[in-house]
Image (cartoon, rainbow, N blue to C red; front, side, top):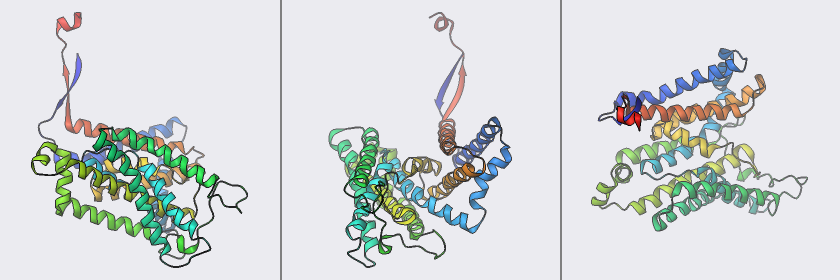
Length: 361
């Protein structure tokens, strides 16, 4: 007897919508088993992990701050994945956006003042992220190099570049030799929406990006081109669409949004450049994109849920003395169940009896 996967002729639309919810439920159930195995009360642990991040106004503001980069990056990644381009290097593009935008803040530190500084930083961050993303796009279209490998390897280049800058030429001379840049001036920090909280204009930008991406995919010719190239590249060529130009476009948009998220994060929650500026937003956004079914509105909802796991993990560190790696376990389980549910949605599992001659062989 052996298991065989056969592709379904028609997949249920309702099951496609329910699949992410099933994956979330299975992740929570697995988390309960994990906590029980660690000798903790599963109900209490899950409440700290998933309910405490939405328990009060301050927690909701923190949730918005954590969700903003996830939503921005995942929307860009969804455009890539819909067009069958696999950008795995959003983490590096996030870092490169922070480097480019941070350069504006450092260059104008104590020299220039004005409301133009942070918009210039956002523009520079988008350029930095897009420039790094264009490298795997060009290598793919010109030399047929696998974009998964190149985009992933560029993450290490961006991270090491940031590490060298904050330990060398950009290190704060008054920072007691710590590897960090100077604190950004007030004009170089992300505009806050409240005077007594951490929520900033990045949250509004993320919502605008979600609406624009949803309009692009549903109402514009470019959105139709993205879906057609991803689903039927041969038909797209007959329709006159250029797969190479579209690859450059979606990689540039994806990188620009990741870079924008990078400078919003650095200018908002940190206020300076440090060797480590991301808890893994670029990689987590891949889970967000697939959990959101590569739909901008879905990415918004999934981004909020994954942000809850980040904050819940931090709360669990304090209340339950759990390592932060438990957060990564939750995110890994979620990705596993999302992919597993999609596999069963597309394929039917059949048990096939092995023929006698096959058994003897």
